[in-house]
Length: 205
Image 1 (cartoon, one colour):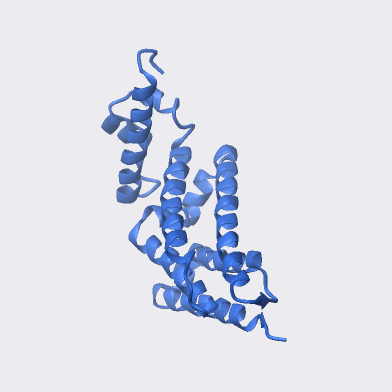
Image 2: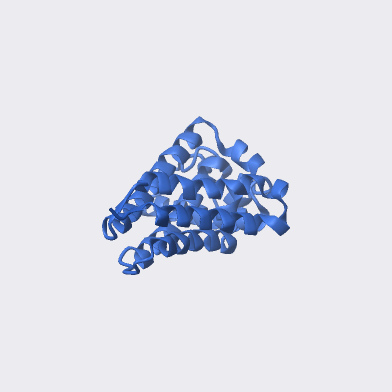
């Protein structure tokens, strides 16, 4: 990186790369977005890009994790202190927030495209994705455990509920195979089944 860039300038360039990258990925998709276009819009040399991110996939993963975390914070803020007694409704509301956010923000869907997932999982990016998923899973577990603790004793644990909900998301890898006319119905049928499983697991003795 040119030595004349101050720390403040470096931070501004990085933020601009994230902003322009988000626009490009959402407009063109992963495969048709390239580093040359991003750096041209930001106004830096292509070689300077690699002082901030190791690859296009690395940039994508950073943008994806930031946008996904915004959704997670929104969900936590709106559901953490919910006082409804119906834990099945909480499970469905939580999933609905996450699912509808993916509809509104293309960046949250791109990661589920099979060819994109393969393209971005070099060793470094794969490690970041794994670490990020661990963080999200722990946040979900903590929230769901709070719901369980406030409503009695359950035979199912928060981690199992978390991974059941996350597994429904993975259906998006197979959306084309399921077909657009059945995909959403399948998703909501499964999440309803998870919600009812949680509700029935309340220990009443």
